[in-house]
Length: 104
Image 1 (cartoon, rainbow, N blue to C red):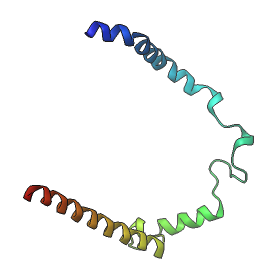
Image 2 (image 1 turned 90 degrees about the horizontal axis):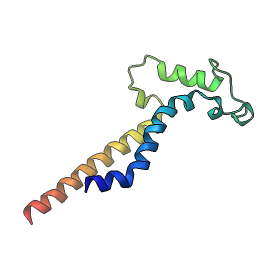
Image 3 (image 1 turned 90 degrees about the vertical axis):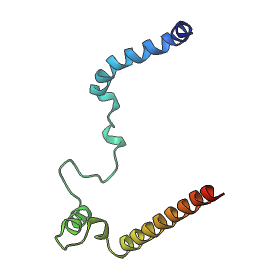
Image 4 (image 1 turned 30 degrees about the horizontal axis):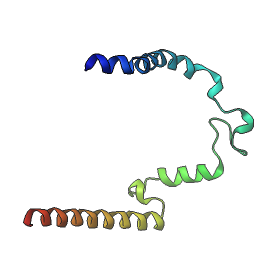
C-alpha cells in the first residue's frame, strides 16, 4: 500500500522539492516587484510621511494613559464595547449549549 501511494504521488513530491530549491532564487528576482506606473498615485517615497500619517502617529503615540485600542476616539470606544459585549454573549451561548448537552 505504501509503495502504491509513493509511486502515485512521486511526481508531485519531486516537484515540491524542486520548488523548495528554486523559491529563494525566485524571491530575489525583480519580476515580482511592482513597476512604478502600477504603484499608488500620490504615494510618498520611502521614509516620508504624509501629513495625515504624521498626525495619526502623534495621536497614537501620545502619552495620555489610554490603551492604544481606545486612542482613536469615540468610534474606537464603541467598537471596543460592542466587541466585549459580543464576546460575553458568545461565551454565555456556548456555556448554555454545553450545559444543555450535559443535562439532556
